[in-house]
Length: 244
Ligand code: 1GP
Image 1 (tube, rainbow, N blue to C red):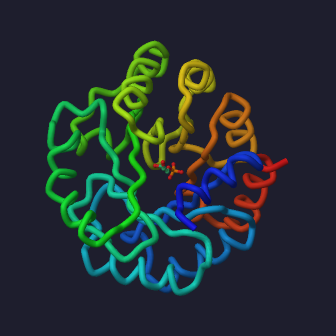
Image 2 (image 1 turned 45 degrees about the vertical axis):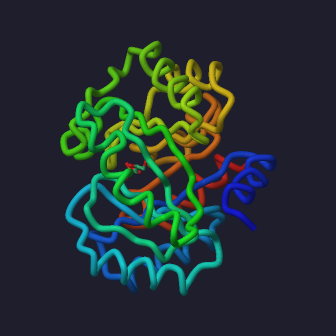
Image 3 (image 1 turned 135 degrees about the vertical axis):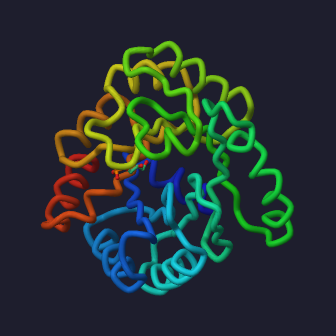
């Protein structure tokens, strides 16, 4: 089944949860074990990627180890990194809509697109919008961050993504952010768009997860939480907040 159809089916049943695994943070084997736990507690998808410091070797080995261990789809999440993985189930074709640098908007993508076409890799096109604080991605992506109280600007970018024909809108507060994207902003964007809304960055607790879900997140991405002690229980409570 195509990944996009899989996501659509999952969305018909409720919110979708994604576990993000950063290959620079642990060995491939540890990454595989973490994602296996994520699958056990109910995660629907795995993203492999991260903003900085990912070597091609770590990425390839992590992608391979994770693929061997889990049966849920594993997607490549190419945020800012030069490394690339072509051996996963689909490729998130992200355009950083509020970057000042056209390389992040369409430049890098234009170099990889012919390869993706020839390899017949499934593409999920995503309008990626970075909201304060933006963290490392905000810096390396040369982002004009959307201010946390500027709901209208977030709506403008989200509608831009939709009008450009992108399949998903992704509001990102940044990996390791102290707080998720504000609920009011999620609500404002969700009211306006017709494509699924992905929310990531700073979601660590069941309360955070419930808040973003109730505000309108269709797909919720967590990363850091899997790197902390007691991650199985934390993830389990996030999943029950999203799925109940
Ligand atoms: C994915 O960058 C996020 O969108 C992950 O952020 O590590 O803060 O969960 P956290």
